[in-house]
Length: 330
Image (cartoon, rainbow, N blue to C red; front, side, top):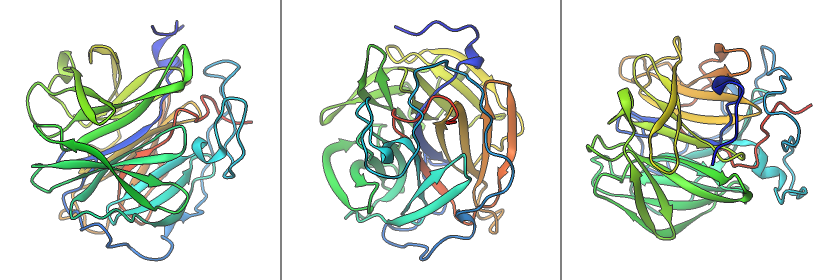
């Protein structure tokens, strides 16, 4: 079931993840877990401002949760404040919170996951728990860890990933009839044919179906919504944003976003009615460039590629739960 729309691109909403050349959110130059960048980041991390925050377009109408605090208070929808903001994962295995309206990154810490695999992608559930995909550099195996967004502590899951599903794009999407219920959707990004969309059921991964049309066989990062929708960031040239049918994997509608770079390391999240794209080029070609943050605003079709530039670290994962506001907080 999908909600009615006046216009597809006037009613977008979503929730979080990441990506790279190897697939979903890894990068070409992935360090081993535990090698942090150390200290607070520069140039936008830990409180950069600059430019105006997003507007107050009433994209989804009334009724959306609009809290964006950092405390642990729970609202009427059962969402704690920590579940309403964005989180990002760096290639140096560090977790940050991100407040898009304030253009502020804050370092939480180095992930404590005990693995020799590389961090690749991330999604965040309604309890503000980050689910992080780690993968071997040759894509021969992958796994998922649960990470606290409070202190970056980590615990393993029993989910083992293989057969084309080791490297993932990830995003939670809620059930439209029961907003508190959600599923973790994944996209296989190992260049294995006929993969497309899947979802995590308990400790196993269930394939859903291939992407369709011109996006068949393409890699995607995923972000879901509190109103039951699922979107993909496809790193084609130009890059594309598409709504995905959660039941079949079919592409409902896609839009080219010209001006946003086709990246080597990337991530994707939704917050407050807008989409945020985290992109960085090949580090061997542009060693001094870190991640840029671009914003796409469906309410007026604007693309701001200078929203934040060269933030000081390379993002390989992003996540935001389905508790995130569907419109700009007032």
